Image 1 (cartoon, rainbow, N blue to C red):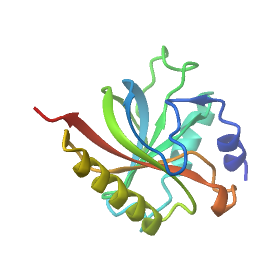
Image 2 (cartoon, rainbow, N blue to C red; image 1 turned 90 degrees about the horizontal axis):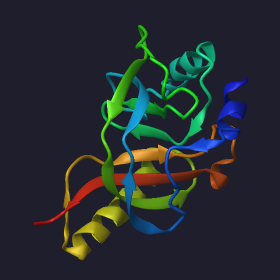
Image 3 (cartoon, one colour; image 1 turned 90 degrees about the vertical axis):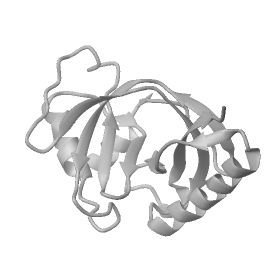
Image 4 (tube, rainbow, N blue to C red; image 1 turned 180 degrees about the vertical axis):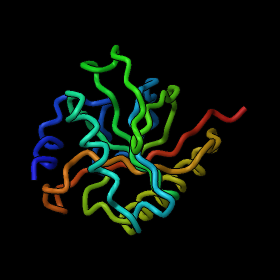
Length: 169
């Protein structure tokens, strides 16, 4: 299968990766994204990748990293890189082209299998950290950020949990 190799070779990153075990606050720039949506939880239906992959390959768009995931309902986001950012991309029957505004997120990096258990463990640590700081307000739901392809060994896969925040008034 060609898709995993393209993911591994993604040369452009939408933003800087948070290292394993690190918690940080970071600014994510406004972006154009490609979105595939499902009506069920991401971990129930994990077949969102291929429609996005076919969208970029049929339009000669380079693969970027990471992939962002909304868990419930399941949504997967590919970030559009510099090679296609100036092009007029149109939604297809299965993939939407959208603009997302800049965001400030609390982020925790972790390694391991891309599953709900690892996501929930990291999310729990991150929520506790945010609450302990006493200066942030959570403004949205947690998202999974996946940096590596399915072909990478589970113990070497790099991921993050992002929670959108604002400084409390």
